[in-house]
Image 1 (spheres, one colour):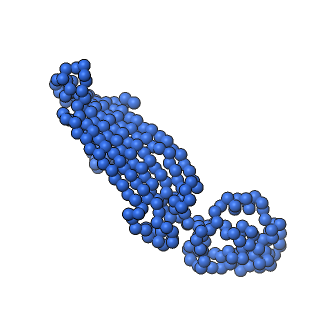
Image 2 (spheres, one colour):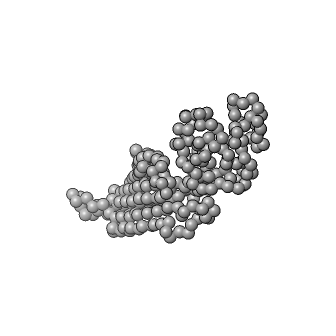
Image 3 (cartoon, one colour):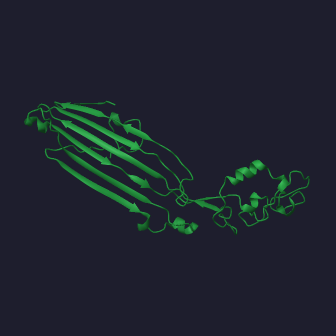
Length: 265
């Protein structure tokens, strides 16, 4: 990690810079494989879910990977040249389903969708009165008045069909919202669990043709698969597709203590 006295190649950015050096192949073939995993069955219920009274969120993380490196053998060349070209390849494919935070929303209740606001209270537990726009009387949202709808109920023939269609697109409340407090207006809870698979590849070639000359080529590639976001209890409610492949090749040549580097793709 570089904290100060940056070279010119690390300019135009604030904060620390992390410089990573990839492994190279050796005279013999070596490789390794691994797998990391996490499951919601192995975890305790987070305190956010305990407080909101929701189930333990779904979590599934699988990270398989392997790497292999060694000399590159070219059949039509003399065997003495076999140890002058080396390769190293690594692959890692994280498959991540990680829950987001518990979110609270305010959704119209079944009574409110029918124009009945007799059970609609504010955060202090006070009834919220609805003003009749056709009445000339005064109506206070907290104390009421002659200009409010009788019983705080809007007649069925006064309901806007466009507003009703919009309300029907929203889900019904799934948690209680009774009593005063900051959560009194929240009656719907949701927790998204996005799926974020990806594929990481890295190929490195090292060549030593003559003397101190050294050739280096590194080709990293990152592929992001389609991302799906949905409620872990009702999958498929929301969706987001993203596909992106990034490939960057760099080459470097070293001879007699001088180094040059340029992007090749």
